[in-house]
Image (cartoon, rainbow, N blue to C red; front, side, top):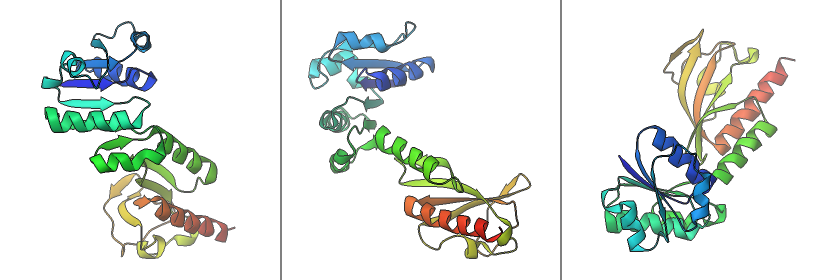
Amino acid sequence: MKVIIVGCGRMGAELAYRLCKRNVDVSIIDLEEATFSNLPADFHGRRVEGDALNRDTLHRAGIEHADALVAVTNKDALNAVLCHTAREYYGVEQVVARNYFSSCRAMFEIFNVQVISGTSWAAQRMEEMVYHSEVRTVYSTGNGEVEIYEFTIPTSWDGHKISEVVPSSDCVIVSLSRAGVASLAGKDDFVREGDILHISATFEGAEAMRVRVHSAQEAKK
């Protein structure tokens, strides 16, 4: 597999090194030679100094044979254009961009580019940790728009149907774990105290679930 990374800041260097350790053929591009010092000494990929918008730079990085391009500079417009160029003009199948400013997310949607927003993702994780702990995040998709959450069934819900527990909107049942054994569950199944229920939900759905769990826990006091 051949991967090109544009941007050798902390994120780009970390990604390049992780892929390198998996024996992936990695080329990393940056305009400033000094940024390559972010790479560990045992990084054995290709370092390409130059402007990533320059055709010669991309060719030196091996764009003709690339399976994926990841743009992680701190310029959203550059990341979007690079991903669009790699896919449309060079036929690179997998392109991923870093979204530096969340206000620029719409730009990536115009180009139909998959984005990772470290700022949005981290802020939401911290909000959840500070705000509530009753419903825990176990898996995140995209940049946190839809996630899988788990919560423990409190005493006051023992013997209730799942349909009485989970909000009807913005939540989808994933699984029910009882005594360490997980199974697929439906809205008509009954829950017991101590069961662990996993749901897929939007942020709004998770908030509604947190309110329900908190109220149920308060009811048993």
